[in-house]
Length: 216
Image (cartoon, rainbow, N blue to C red; front, top):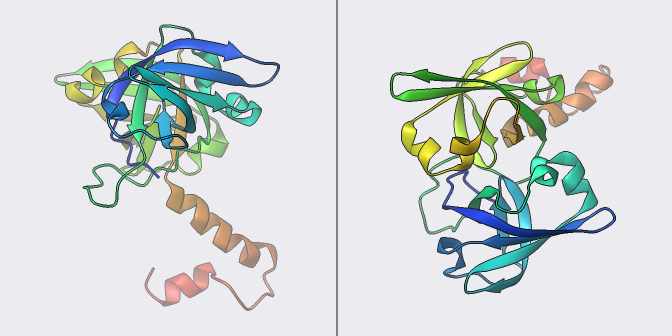
């Protein structure tokens, strides 16, 4: 699990592509302080496993499914990437609960300055937007952000200059693809409600009426 608070921006040194998979070589420094083989590291919000490491970086395998469901396939040598180690239980969880399991890809539609803030509008499909709510949490390339506005086919976030400066948001331009992970809670609530919706006669499980009766 992660928090969406980026620890470091690394650089993709090389990408070795197979028939349907890839190995990433990533240069880093901060996250190498206590790295071990098998550690989980979020790379642009995608949970990957460190398969080897050196004093200057680490490698990670990327499966076919991960390439299909994320924007990692568009990376090139020299690309900057957000990096975060799995959260420790003895620290502050500054963002929100992030699994590192990307739900899909969005596209940067607009970037607008607003005094000291920078607005990013991200186009996304209905399978993503159904879980996006105003003032809710979302990760863009692994960055924990607050949703400021939701439209029919897009949503917007307002980032402070510090967040842009210390993450790869600074590299994003209109038309770029970004990894998106929605708040995990909404997906589980929907799943719990499905049996009741699919079988109205079923008496067990959580229903909208049950939640309403008890004040939810």
